[in-house]
Structures are given as structure tokens and as C-alpha cells.
Amino acid sequence: MKWLGVAALAGVLVQGLLGGFRVVLHARFGTGFAVLHGCFAQIVFSLLVSLAVLTSTRFAVVSLPLEEAAGVRRWSLLLTALVFVQLIWGALVRHTNGALAQRLHLATAFAVVAAAVWFVHLVLTSPAARRVLGRTLIWLGILLALQVLLGIESWLDKYAGVPMPEMRIPKTVGQASHRIAHVLVGSFILATTVVQTVLVHSFSCEPKASAESACLRLTAKQPDVRVSNNVSQLEGTA
Image 1: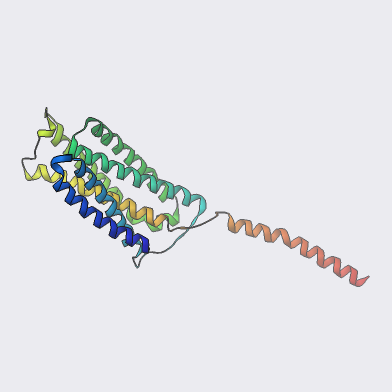
Image 2 (image 1 turned 45 degrees about the vertical axis):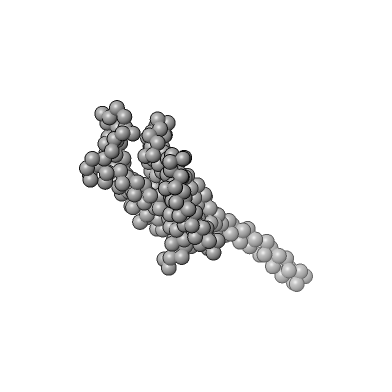
């Protein structure tokens, strides 16, 4: 916990430096610092969200069978990583309009939705995980649906019927608000997946059949005890 706080503080300081470098060195290095500044901001935001979850009074450790915890943990990490990669592609599209970044941004959007659907399925099939993550799943679904709509509007506004998208500047408040909201909702989705990842990694894992195996061990030992008692009684009578 202490080192997480130190990392968050260091991240805020580095983010401030990157912001200064972006302004001072923009003429020399172009949009490179803008992309770096935007992507690193998501890392700092994720650290702060993790710190808020771990220090919350409602934070509690939940017991979850080992087999179920492994799948939920693995897919929570994968979903968070995909969302972060998608934000990187979005930053590249926003600042560079690169053809490869455009294609990767579209392709990764489908991957994020598919991973989110499977993660929801895994959580809903586990009563313990559903009890802890149920509310975050609702938020994730709402944010993803909203993000898809905002993404379509932003994409059409930026590229539809425009021969040079890099020259397209939003002319109205509505056009600008689509893109701003798209960026903000993307950050909220990342925050939601980070919360889910922190929560599922707080699960205390135990084998699913531990109780059954313990009962089997006890019942297997009982006949030996009865046999030894009968033998001792026979020896006493003899």
C-alpha cells in the first residue's frame, strides 16, 4: 500500500513534467510528447483509482474457489490491458491521424467488447464474484454502450466525406463535445476495469473441493479406528 502511494505521487510529478515538455518541446518533437502525455495520464489515473479502492472502508476480501478465481483474474487483467491499448491507439488517431492507428483503433474496439462480454459471463457464473463485482458490471455495460455510440459519432464527424481529416477542426460545440466525451468515457472504462481487477485480485483463493476432500479423509480414517478398538477389546477378553 505504501509503495502504491509512492508510485502514484511519483506518477503525478512525472505527468507534470511531461506536460511542461509537451508545451516547450512541441515545435521540436511534434505530437510525440502529446501522445506520451496523454497515455501516461491514464497510468497515473489507474494508480490513483487503485489506491482509492484499496483504502476504501468498503474494501473486503472475499473467498472464491481457486478454479473460478483463476479465470476471473486472468480475464480482468486482459480486459484492462486491452482498454489501455485502445486508449493508446485513440491518442495516436487524435494526434497523428496515422492510417495504421486508425485500423488498430477499430479492431481493438471489437476485441474490448468481446473480452468484456466474456468477463461478464465469468463473473455472472460465480456467485462470490457476482456479489462483489455486480455493480461494476452494470457501470461497465453502460459505459461501453455509450462509448460505442460516441465512437461512431466521433469517427463520422472526423472522417466521413473529408479528403484531409487532419485539416478537419470541430466547427460547433456539439462536434467538439463528441470527441471530448469519447476520451472521457474511455478513461472511465479504464477506471472501471482497474477497480474490477483490484477487487478480483483481493479474492482469497481456496480449492473448490477442499471441504469434500476433508470429509473423505475423515471417513476413510474412521474404519481404521473402529478396527483398532475391536482388536484391543478382543485382546482384553483373551
